Length: 215
Image (cartoon, rainbow, N blue to C red):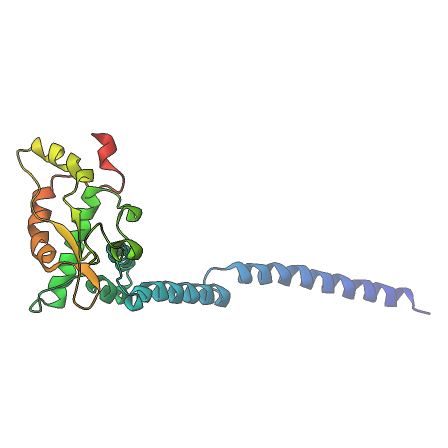
């Protein structure tokens, strides 16, 4: 039969064991919740990989309509602005550039076009013709559509009203054309017009919503 001394020693050991458990467990919980733990790093790595895949996706997507050109351009520029430079090929593929331009010059033109579009307000992609529309016979003309003028257009009549207060008017056009390779891109003339478009609309404030509703 255990003596009183044995019982006291057993209780003491149990007390020490419980004290050790309560001391160590909170440290384990804190270590698991500390930012920068291995699980946190893995999550971040997977997130970056996912965004990189999104940035690369438009490169393999055929620019089959004006709507698709604008969609790829805007989504890829968003990726570039988020720091994913691997989206640049998707952006530049949306343009029919003159062959003598450097990559830096092409990127500058793309950024400038985005500035112009931001001044014109939110782009409603559903208002641009999609693949079905551009390949459907139009009236008595059995040829598919090969050219779409995004700007100027009646929906942007407010731009003239706004700029008239400054005694100026917008110049240049934004046109998306079908090439001989059956791929749609911002036209060569649009590339040449972008600097004057930028200059003639620079007094418009940047906006992502419908400016026409404010006139």
